[in-house]
Length: 184
Image (cartoon, rainbow, N blue to C red; front, top):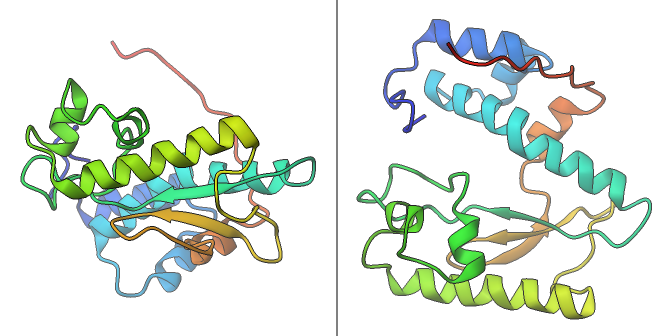
């Protein structure tokens, strides 16, 4: 929302449109998140539709055929004064590659990364190196009965899938093909 200048600009109409166009059941969505305001609902449905549900569906499908590990990055990006970006798309890249200041990383993490960024980056890199060399990133496999997920935050943890409410809302939903068009 920040990049498009939408922060603080989500009206009830825009939230209703997003829920109508993206959510499997807009009213069930509102009922499942009763304390969520319009901006939070808008953010939730976009995040679920674009990132979270495709990821969890891929994990659920892949686990039928092989070892599957799921993670969710929840560490809020400290860039731009903090409390602006949250755990935004693209934040995993500087953490994975240890590049915490150059290019977009400087915007996401800040020109002077906090010590927590370097510590978290070391944990993330260690997990991916372990996965690449042994097939085991250091947390249990994702299976339908336990849904183990590595939650990457200041204090990483392993828990059942943390977005269970959304997962249940989207269960059985068939995603329609995307119609892509060039902007004029």
